[in-house]
View 1: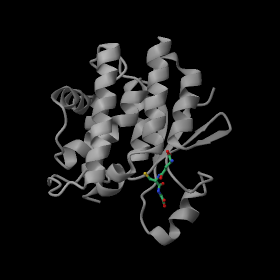
View 2 (view 1 turned 180 degrees about the vertical axis):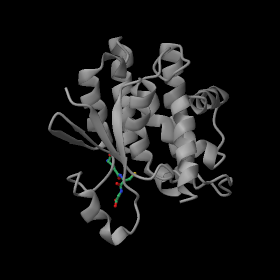
View 3 (view 1 turned 30 degrees about the horizontal axis):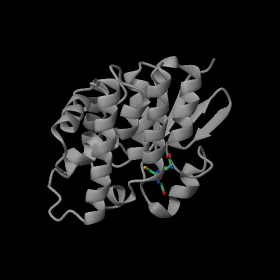
View 4 (view 1 turned 120 degrees about the vertical axis):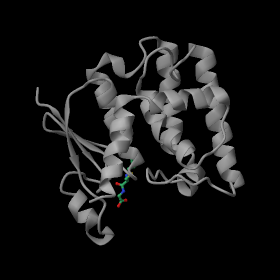
Length: 209
Ligand SMILES: N[C@@H](CCC(=O)N[C@@H](CS)C(=O)NCC(=O)O)C(=O)O
């Protein structure tokens, strides 16, 4: 079996890239990483289409397969590695629902608070639509803690759903958004992951290039 090759964008900004990267790193699944800077927008499609049919990152290559889109990558990895999702069916199903909701939604939070690892300033005026997204995220996470007992979203282990919401954890930090203390506790724990520290370190280095 060949090794996984993951194509990603700038660590400072690429929230979709962070999800599979963090999952692979934290589950200790070996992979090769190729970072393609966003760079000039006019040439990006052509550059990215050399490895990704949508011209977007992330994109995984494995055993002559090309797997584009972060959600398809997570599902592909789940077929190979049992630790990607919780073994218990309720927790696994809940995780898939939460991931699907993240993949398709929270557009206001994504639009008004794009992931930016250089940012430290609070968001002054929080649009109502952003607060609606945050309220739903908070309810979802609290439901996960209540159902599965924490400390991770779907139980005692870090799994795909934690990786999928990691960019939201970073956004809440970067824009200094207020969230329920139990959710903040999960964010603090995520910030302690070696892989998150490595991502942020690499993102900081991008600013010096
Ligand atoms: N639905 C896709 C979204 C991928 C996406 O939008 N990636 C952004 C970077 S975070 C991208 O490649 N943008 C390049 C562009 O649109 O030119 C996924 O889940 O992977």
